Image (cartoon, rainbow, N blue to C red; front, side, top):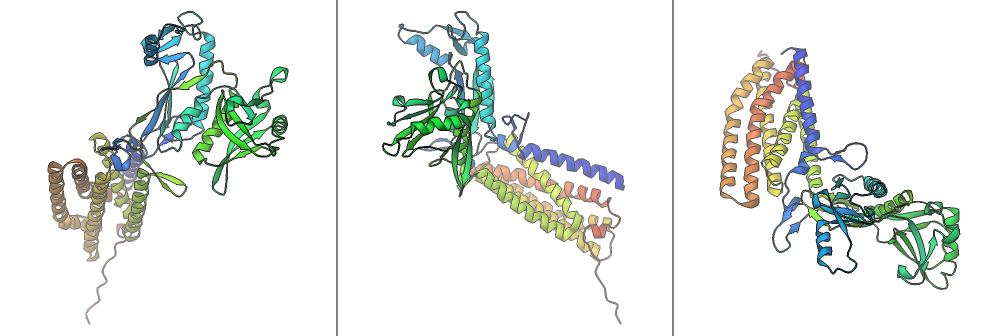
Length: 503
């Protein structure tokens, strides 16, 4: 094959491998809003319990996966809540209007102003709530989150269970309305007095007293910082002036719901820096709730969080020090290290020919992931072990074929003849090995159950792809890449044997 044709074919194959790599493994944001992410094939595939899927037995339940919830604006209820209301007593019963085919019901007075359709004011208020939710969720920068409007006026949201405090995120993010700061001598916020914003004729938006809320980390400890304006600090300082003599409690609320409850033992004369039991995620959630509420203060309607439930398909988190890793993350790391070691070995020993093995292996790996998703094969210990075995088989078989060609080249044959003869000599050894392993894998799949059966099925596909990769794709790629070099021997790091003349 000529040099130009070789370059074109190799470029196309490399692009295909690169695109499949992204599709199979790489999540990335879509639309620039920080909410919508492309979900790679590996995330779609089923997971067994050891990688975050379904666990059977007495503790049956989903490990990992995602949490999901539906947010309902004030005045909008689910069909279930509507039915419960109708079954309740008649006194004070709310009148509702069916909406979205009866999927939800609207408060006739509050939402429709006595009519049958939601008012423009309610629609505007819902849009403001939706924008607030989008801003809050976007700040999490979390792969696996979703946020979408359903039934006209409800918001369906999911967060990965691997996100620390994801349940708290749903609860806190449902709080809509003004930010208020209260102070009292009891741990019960209902008996506390409002400090910010000032009541009466001096009332101003809370943003006139609170600049922002953010997360800071000091020596590995996350904390929430609430930054006050001078006017806000003055009010806080005056309210807590007697705290040294009689301890009090400071409450920061959003929409009347407490997000910070702080015991105060001395006068506060600076911004609040609150640590304690916060993790990085939970501190971010609290700070985001406060900070976004400052931008969306004038909410005409509140919002409530519906029933929380789990959705399968995520990964159970593992914690290493302060870093939370999923089981699949650890598999990624392990395969990444092994792949790097394999690539270094082939590139050092076979020069640019090492790229042939790398491309062959990447395509093999991508096809295996697609098979795991399409068959489907639950990704667990068995499937991972099968992938590791078939990966090693492919790489060893490629190395055997390379070495066979190296020996032929060393005794004086051309590179084309060396490749042809080398493959011919090792073909049946490689073929027989794959046939034996394929038979064993099929037997295991047919007679075994559960995880062992998954191992057998995964190994069957892995061995088949390994054989095709070594005996067909690997040789074809070698043929293509040889066309790019004027000295194929040096291209492959092959050398002739030095023969000493007899005297």
